[in-house]
Image (tube, rainbow, N blue to C red; front, side, top):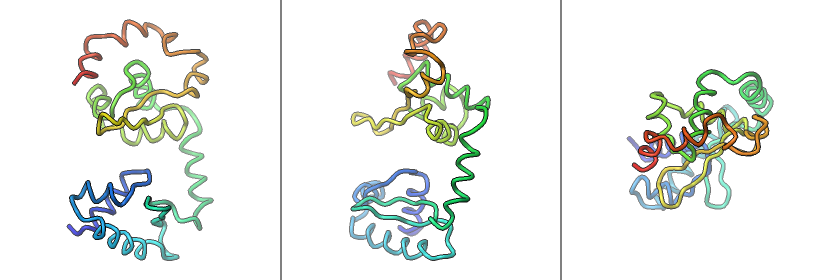
Length: 177
């Protein structure tokens, strides 16, 4: 695989801006090689026939929808964040509520399925937020103030059996791994 291909994959799954330095660290490459590859990818994607563009702000890079397709992207996003929560979204939200802050692998261990898209949709709805953890390589997820407002509660402790479930031995053992 070429360095461009690897960078393309990283930017695609990252869903947030990344510095060239961080990408170089992940790939164990020189930053100059990463910057050259990013420039090449920007030339590849930023044409008028591309649905995605590679944008740069200072030293951060991110893949984004082509601004010419803004209306279609907005229509899709509105459809994604409106309407009822699905059963998998409700299950994920419940686990985050009772176990958070929780990493994605911990969440997936409890649920037994990949939760990437579900977490993304819950974040788009403003019900879950991602926190960078400086002591851990993985971000953690927890509920938001919007979630509390949506539930009509003042704190997570008001959830049914919160104290008992939040302190359950299985949950505390996962959070200590």
